[in-house]
Length: 294
Ligand SMILES: [Zn+2]
Image (cartoon, rainbow, N blue to C red; front, side):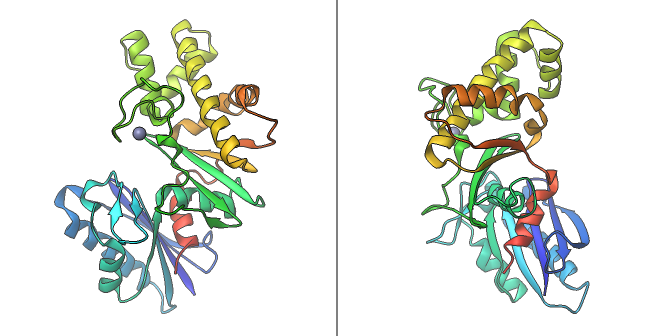
């Protein structure tokens, strides 16, 4: 049986048709999300993409999708979505009715961790934690090859765990000092802007840090301390075998050397958790979605 994995993003929807091996891609296609046109249009775009991929061959397919939000396990409605038009909608049921078959919908960060755990940097480990440090910050946990969601889907959302900044930056979620505001790409740029009054990309701040620019050194020094606090908390709560980092910030090599060193300096005990960069890059979301297809 073939698989279809869908990664629903804010601006585009990516879909893959694979064999029963979710890494073995037969067809890959992207369409626009068209969020601004509302839920009905987004639903039609997802269904259209799935139908197109499903019609490629006569082989029956299993369906899985990652979304920037959580499907509440009791109400089956979407919540905590940064794609606003999805909030409160019964996306799983609406798609199943339209397509005439069931679809498994999972948080996109969980899809990232699942694909890295099964096919990427976390392959072979029992307990894999993943964090996406991108525009925002999300995360998830995979134990024995299965996402651990928690009762309502909250498990692994370390982006909204406070990193000892009780009077810190006000987060969109309503709390203060959430890790997302210090460790996402947007958060790192904010720290630089507040220190210098200027805008600079994360990659450029990192380059400046390596070449000895004093403002960049100050900012990266703070970021590494925040990173260490966040990682140390994950280690104490879960002590995973490995923490896999994804998103745009994940390609800063300093996280895996100095970031890991500072983490081990402040963490309780001597955990042997590794901290590594992801292996599947931007494709991990769709492969994770295909992995959990039903
Ligand atoms: Zn928050």
